[in-house]
Length: 162
Image 1 (cartoon, helix red, strand yellow):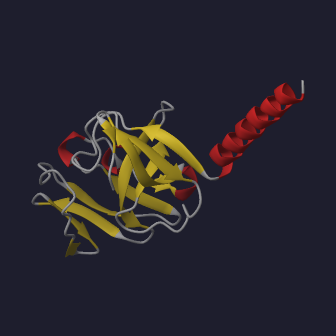
Image 2: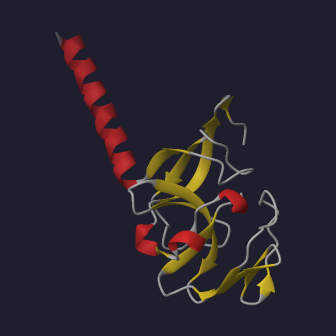
Image 3: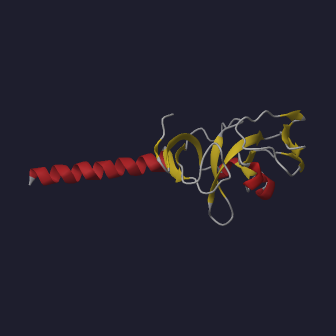
C-alpha cells in the first residue's frame, strides 16, 4: 500500500510541476507552414519562454496570436518608435538597410513607411514572400506576445543538435 501511495504522490507532483512550468515559465509550440524557413521548418517543435517578453530585441523570434485564435511564429524587426519600410527587396529600419542573413530570399513587394507605436512590435517571417505578418496584421501589442522562442527541441526527423 505504501508503494502505491508513493507512486501516486510522485505522479501528482510531476503533473503539478509540469503544469506550473507550462503556466509560468515556458510553452511548447509546433511550427506550422513555411513562413519561417529557413530558420524553422514546418512541424519543427520549439520551446518559448514566457519571461522577458517585454524586453524584446531585434531578431528575437516570438509567438503571437492572430484574430482567428491561431498562434504564429515571427521575427521581431521593429520596436516602438522605429520607422519600418520595405523597398527594393530589403528591410529598412530608421532609414538604414538591415542586414538579414536569416531570411530565405529578398522580398518581392514593397511596404510603405510605418512608425511602430508605443508598446508594440513589428514582426516578419523569415520566408518573407510566403508569410502573413505585420504587413498584414499591423504592429502587435507587446501584451499579445505569448513567448520568446529560445530552443528548437526537434524537427520532423528527430532531435536537434544545437
